[in-house]
Structures are given as structure tokens and as C-alpha cells.
Length: 351
Ligand SMILES: C[S@@+](CC[C@H](N)C(=O)[O-])C[C@H]1O[C@@H](n2cnc3c(N)ncnc32)[C@H](O)[C@@H]1O
Image (cartoon, rainbow, N blue to C red):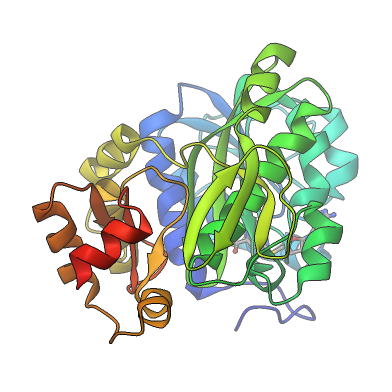
């Protein structure tokens, strides 16, 4: 069954890697007896994989759909686990709590150490409430499949949902990811909660981000200082903390780091034979990707600006490094590279 078939229960095989990363994240970060909520579970694939492959955690799987709920119960049994209805005490650590509730109604009834939000489209409407239902240093993970608004194809929808302007350049996937991360940080900050991104990435048709909570207004203020704007002018990117004039800019968006390299390397080290090739490829590129500046160059944009043939990406990275600049591939696009070289230096080096 393909994605988006709303009349039946939603299962998207293209999300295998999304769930792989959840399992690896849990192996690195989940502490004993963490309470994890798979809030919009569909078939329950994520929560069940975490119960079977992850470290010991108390898993709660929820979906409001009657069809989905029945499949969740069936999948729990098929995997040799036991499903316990909400409000019934589990006998065993491996028992999975289940509920068939609207997530808006479920969230106020409990507290969790990790809440996962994997909706159709945008997760933003659940963020305020979920942030408040996390334990002190809990984790919020979100998937966003509304890449067309976030990347600038449907600019008005992006402004409506994320209160931010997207920008459709070669760097649009990073821009879209940073808009999503910035919007989550801003929504949580409203209730004095700091949500710091630990791992955020783009893959194929979705954005995914993991945030760690700290419940302090001071920390939220510090995060907001790193929310700003990206400007694209004459083929060159720059950043600003103030809203720019003109048309070619994006934001507000997150300008800080999108992941911790140590976490990525730890996840790679814990990857077993069950991880998909896509997951290993993604983590492999991330483990070497530069964290800053908060934008990358696309070889097609470079070719247009310099009126030359597009350079080969790996060759451009090699030459820049030979010339003493920092440079790396990026996971967003095989034609993208990140560098601390400015446009003038880039022209010199690539010529
Ligand atoms: C994209 S699917 C989830 C996919 C699943 N997480 C996976 O890894 O395969 C979204 C699910 O959210 C459920 N859903 C949507 N809105 C909801 C709400 N307000 N409360 C509870 N479930 C909801 C839908 O029934 C659907 O099964």
C-alpha cells in the first residue's frame, strides 16, 4: 500500500529509513525506562520496531483511526509482544500501552520522555502541546512531509503554517529544514520551553528533526538569538539577524547547527545488518558534512552565476580543500557542497 491512501491504514515503505534512524537514536540516547509516545502511529511500525530493536523503554502507541488501531494490535501480537490498553498497568517491560485517541485529547493526560509526531504533512499544530507534555529533558521528534511549502513551491502555505518565507534556490531543502526547525523553536519558546535541535535532516520526501527540551525562558531566549534570515544576492548567500528588504530572502529560520557529529558517529557505530542502505548512506554523508555556514552552493547555481559548465561536486570539494578552504558534500543534494569560501574565492578556485 502506498503513502497517502487515507481510506486504508497508512503504511509507507519509503519511511523505513526514517524509522531506522529512530531506532539508532534510541540506542544512543534513550535512558532506562524512558516513556515513549508514538503519537500518530499508523500501523505502529515505529513504536513496535523500538520495542523489538531498541533499548528497554515503556512504549505507548496511539492512533485515532479505528482501522489503524486494529492493525496496531495485530502487529503487536505478530511481533510476540503484548498490547495493554491505556490505564491498565503493564505486567512486563515489553508490554506496549495502546490507545485510540485524538492526540490533542491524549497529550494532556500524561507526560512522556519522548514524543514522536509523524503526521500527514506538517507537525507544527501539535508542537505547543507536545512540548509541554515532555519530561524535563525529554525529546520531541517530528516528521514534516510538506516539503513543497517549506521549499518554496507553495510559498503562501509556508507563510501560513510556519510564519516564515521560503526561498526556492538550489539550497531550498536546507532552507526548508531550517524553517521547520526555527518554527518548532519559536512555538515552544511561547511557553518558555527551549527545544534544542540534536539531529535534523532531509531525506527524499520528508524532513525530520529531534529536539531536546530544557524548560527555561533563558535557554529559549538564547535559541531565539540564533533564529534569523538567509539572503541570496548575486549568486551569493549571507545571513542576517534582521528581516531583509527585497525579495530574495528566507526566514525566520534556524541558523545554528542541525546535528551533533558525535551523535551521528555513535549511531553509525551502532548500526547493524538490519539498517537500510539509505540509512547508512545518509549517516555516512552527515558524519563528514560541515555544520556551518547555514547554506550550501548548488553546482547549477554556480554555473549560472559564473556562466561556466557546472563543476563536478566532489572535484569542487577537493579543489577547495587543496586551496585551504573548508568544504564538504551535503546530504541534501548530490550537486550541493558547503564551503567557507566566498563567491569571489569560489570563482577563482573553480576557474
Ligand atoms: C503519516 S501516518 C503515521 C505513519 C506512522 N508513524 C509510520 O511510521 O508508518 C499519520 C497517522 O496519524 C493518524 N492521525 C492523524 N491525526 C490524528 C490525531 N489528531 N490524533 C491521532 N491520530 C491521528 C492517522 O490516522 C494516521 O494513521
